[in-house]
Image 1 (cartoon, helix red, strand yellow):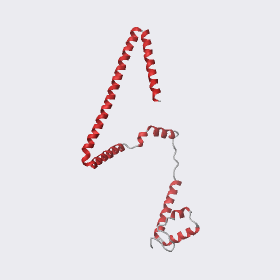
Image 2 (image 1 turned 90 degrees about the vertical axis):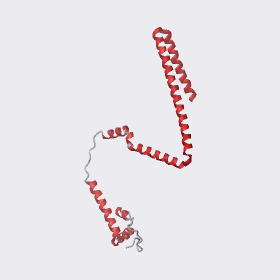
Image 3 (image 1 turned 180 degrees about the vertical axis):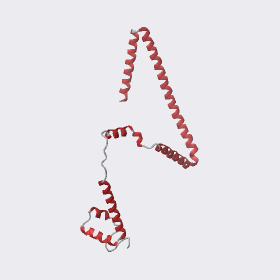
Image 4 (image 1 turned 180 degrees about the horizontal axis):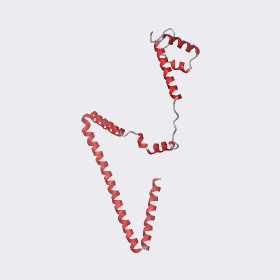
Length: 189
């Protein structure tokens, strides 16, 4: 039999077999399909395969035992889902992403050709300047922390030795820090 039947104009295997099984075809289309299936081995095999699949599915659903879930099943699933956000990704995905990025960088370097040396030199200069900025910021933070610790240690010694005037000085220092932080917040807005 040909792939396309000229008399009934159906394509083999017919896409209407599922609609036929579900009872969605009109009586005229259903009759045409039944006549076609009677003479077409391909469509008859496909129809029988779909019917046997549905029968097996119905049998498995009807004879499935009821599964009892623990009383705290929902709470356990929610707690695990909330605590394992990192578990949503496979561990090797980070490695694969890094390898892909390295490969893309190598391809880009190969595409640059003779300009590679100049591009790398410019990139190295940028990285060097960024490193200088970061180390300078680190030195500033270190010096500020060291200075603060020295001032606080001196204030603590004054407080222990003199009592009242040192306490007033500490209160004044704390008040000035508070006002300074308020001034910084006011300037940001």
